[in-house]
Amino acid sequence: MNIIVCIKQVPDTTEIKIDPVKNTLIREGVPSIMNPDDKGGLELALQMKDKYGANVTVITMGPPQADLILREAFAMGVDRAILLSDRKFAGADTLATSYALAGAIKTLDYDLIIAGRQAIDGDTAQVGPEMAEHLGLPQVSYVIDAERKENGNFIVKKENEDSVQTLEVEGKCVLTVLASAFEARYMTVAGIVDAYNKEVEVWGADKLDVDENKLGLKGSPTKVWQSFPKQLKAPGEVFEVSEEEAVEIIVKKLKEKHLI
Amino acid sequence: MDIKDYKNVYVFAEQRGGMIQSVAYELLGKARDLADALGEKVVAMLLGHNVKDQAQSLIEMGADEVLVADCPELKDYLTEQYSQVVYQMITAGCPSIVLYGATTIGRDLAPRIASRLKTGLTADCTKLEIGIVEETGEKQFRSTRPAFGGNLMATILCPNTRPQMSTVRPGVMQKRVREAGRKGTITMFAPKFDTSKFKVKVIETKMNCKCADDIADAKILVSGGRGVHDKEGFNKLQALADVLGGMVSSSRAMVDAGIMDHCFQVGQTGKTVRPNLYMACGISGAIQHLAGMEESDFIIAINKDKYAPIFSAADLGIVGDLHKIVPMLTERLKKDVEK
Ligand SMILES: Cc1cc2nc3c(=O)[nH]c(=O)nc-3n(C[C@H](O)[C@H](O)[C@H](O)COP(=O)(O)OP(=O)(O)OC[C@H]3O[C@@H](n4cnc5c(N)ncnc54)[C@H](O)[C@@H]3O)c2cc1C
Ligand SMILES: Cc1cc2nc3c(=O)[nH]c(=O)nc-3n(C[C@H](O)[C@H](O)[C@H](O)COP(=O)(O)OP(=O)(O)OC[C@H]3O[C@@H](n4cnc5c(N)ncnc54)[C@H](O)[C@@H]3O)c2cc1C
Image 1 (cartoon, rainbow over the protein chains, first blue to last red):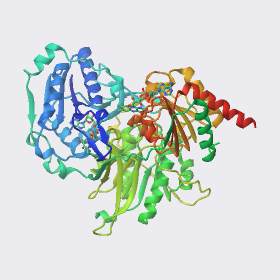
Image 2 (cartoon, rainbow over the protein chains, first blue to last red):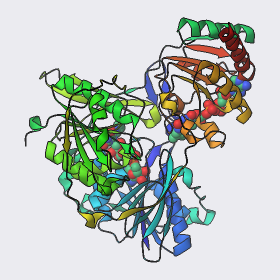
Image 3 (cartoon, each protein chain N blue to C red):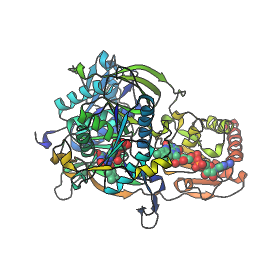
Image 4 (cartoon, each protein chain N blue to C red):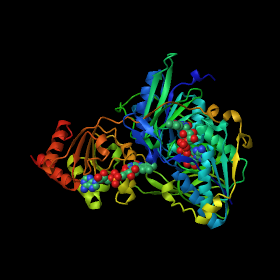
């Protein structure tokens, strides 16, 4: 079986803070990591490799520095890593990103494609389903478990707001995976050493099965018009008083606001 | 076709198990504002099996027209079945704007449609408006959304392709007051299915929600975090919620700890709530939690750490031990009620 996993390098957004004076994002010192849901997806692929035997390929589209997460993936046990890096990909929204990824995947042999549900920087959760459509494949999103049947079908569990569904998918498909469902394995020491001896393939736009006019900024229907750090609201009053006084302050406010 | 010829605001009226979801009504409320600003119509798309009787309800909540596709293939949500129908409705009607709930269904369906239509989609919006372009005086659809884990807000445009599509988080927009007997058009839509593309089937659906009431509908929420410690701590919050006539909700920490069910979770990966009163007890105020509750009308925080970030989101902050204050407050309010 051949499995392709799409992984993205992201800033660890839990470490991002807002400068309260300048009202800007503080990005210095924020580490770059493999997107958590993608690491979950990679774990699912590696579990399938352990169980059924599989070739696992990781693909990322990004700047040359994204090499780092591909090395990490090698150290976790993947067989092949591809970096899509080209000026022509720059400025892509989710439609153009998913189009480029699909254009790379079309040139490869695969039985299953795994993506993360959502990247913690762009936060849209759109790339997986948009890519599935470009490839004309069925998709299951919010995946928490998947197995392969003898006949090549997949039995997939997905988590909804109020239910867990078990679905059967006929043949090739795209799954988008939740990090919380998969505890990713650690890199092994031998794996880390090995990772730097392996080759990361770097592909430009010319290697892909695409119409170059649909890549990057040109191929992106959405435009970020304005962006601004979230406004913090003016803080209310804070009281550090005895419990009895605290209760009276709360009761008084609740009455004032007609909440009781 | 010229982009000026695309008209009307379409809303995907999500139903689950034959029940129209709250988010559909919230979207209709917003769609009404947008359509009025543009001088266009609001059209709801209702897909399902034996759902057509509910079309009138969508009209009473703001739709001018409802397109109904009612057939057995659409009973349960499945990506391809629903995508084919919504795609056909959109290509037949040429709307300028299409809105979906940012639910597990909406976030599965909308990107699929965007990719099929080769148009733009803005995710998880918290604000939608019709602005005026300064240079030309033209009306422009603007969608604002959080990114970077809620630290950054971005306003997104979709200038050159139609329709312009957005998903909106449940609980963010406001429903209109129901206008009983409001008149509108109900149009039955007969989809043409390409069944060769149906590759997914449902084997089993296990409902896992243990809550009868939805925290997103509560007017008063008493919410607990790690500072509540355990189930017994939540009993104290429940007692307070009972005298206030509200519900108990939770931070993710207590859901991850298995103490509260996920359907009670407030925040980025839980629900967005905007009650009249939100009482955050023993919640630190992480940005992902704030994302789900900061639009509440009045916020009270009780936390023993005076530097807890929740205090900067609160209208009233109390530095102290919730395990003492909450029961005392409950007793005090009970006395008031008895009077
Ligand atoms: C502030 C801001 C707001 C934005 N808002 C929108 C918007 O509303 N609509 C829109 O269309 N675009 C938007 N974009 C652009 C969007 O962030 C980029 O297109 C981004 O490359 C992909 O989107 P994402 O990070 O949301 O990925 P998601 O769709 O959340 O990612 C899902 C999965 O797809 C895979 N994946 C995603 N990107 C890559 C990659 N580069 N390489 C390999 N795998 C990948 C991963 O498996 C990932 O887990 C916005 C950008 C910014 C800066
Ligand atoms: C991608 C992502 C999505 C997330 N989504 C969500 C989400 O949807 N919702 C959510 O809530 N979180 C979410 N989180 C987690 C979030 O970052 C925080 O970890 C979480 O909200 C912390 O929960 P808490 O405030 O209950 O716990 P803590 O941060 O541990 O805070 C406990 C607080 O209780 C106070 N306390 C302790 N004892 C007492 C006492 N006796 N009396 C009064 N106060 C006391 C402490 O001072 C402290 O401030 C998400 C995180 C990530 C990375």
